[in-house]
Image (cartoon, rainbow, N blue to C red; front, side):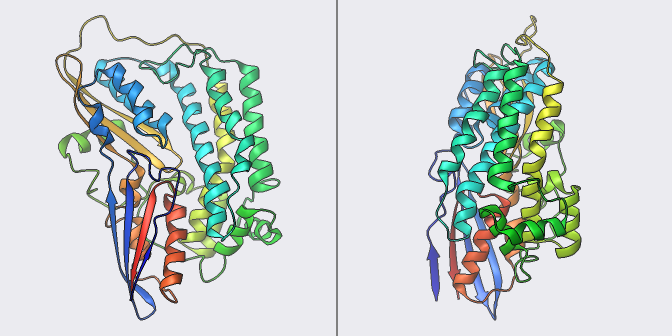
Length: 397
């Protein structure tokens, strides 16, 4: 018997350039005997070829509507590297921009994706208090709205406006996600989940149940790599690197928060699997305001950084940026005229949904009751790994 499930509608579903994932499950004897995961990669990066560096940086956030700020900054960093532009004075502000975007993405998941996994209606109205605060972060840094330009814009931090925006973000998290202080360990998580104050707590209660807490364990190592030079070497050497990563790796909240007290405690109690992945998402949410406050403390006014007076000629560069879903890297090569002759990228989905990656390994061999149960559990694992792309699931019993 075959069962086909309509693709989920993440924020990137149906958006040009965001790709999709197809999962095919073969059930046998109460388990998923085989899990085939295929990713349809976006071709949007090809649209950057032939553009000048300035054009590419302006175009990137429009081509990649999902994580558009991180995409634009990764392309900007790659172009700056190729052109010898030193934009280090803007890095603290750029960290704030990508963290604000990550918080917005996490918030969307909490308001729309998490209720869906509970069979509850989405709560988009909950985002009304979040979105204006996210927008206010950029306005408090770059009043001219030029923060995503090549070399950075006119950085004129408004300390009071930034403090207000960060306070509103923290208040939103406390009210909409944690309903108080975030849990710090497995006992705190269980107590918070038992109160069932909101969808996040109710989902936590579901995911720490014995039949699900350790489900989806994949044993895949964390990506760990952050060096633009390492990503540059891999992408330059092999145009198919992103489509077929040479080794399985996991990127995202768990990679960032593996050492967080909540994640360590939940891992000790429940092992690898859904409970650990969800704990990492909660830890990522809890740490974002603190990380943003630290970046705000390092801010200084800065003018746009311009390219050196001497022409640099053809060159290559790689830029890396963090998203809620994980680490993103863009590599590009400029020709003699300063236009992009080649452009390549590797996105979080390329790691997490690789043919032999965390999703495929977490599904293969996992216990299920029937086809419907397999779909529900697979959806939970997708939501914990990378819920932002459309995912279709096909089950064969």
